[in-house]
Length: 99
Image (cartoon, rainbow, N blue to C red; front, top):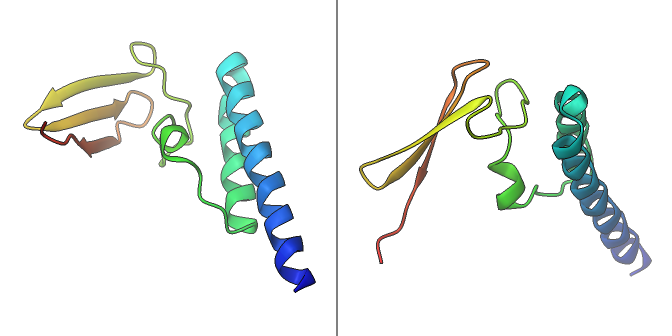
């Protein structure tokens, strides 16, 4: 019973560290790749999912923090949002629901 509370406490601290690393990546562009790499390692070690809104902010291939117009291109095409990283040219397709 004690192990469960220790596990949840670790996961809560991991989530807060991931959020702060993403906030710092947004502020300091020269260290953004390092911060995102650290956030992904923390998530893997502690078996925590990175929240969806944060997951869509970085390139999974090169760990670049994506800023529209600066290092990524965003387009819409056939009910999808297409995000292209301009550093490694990886394409990410996100489906859009109809209303």
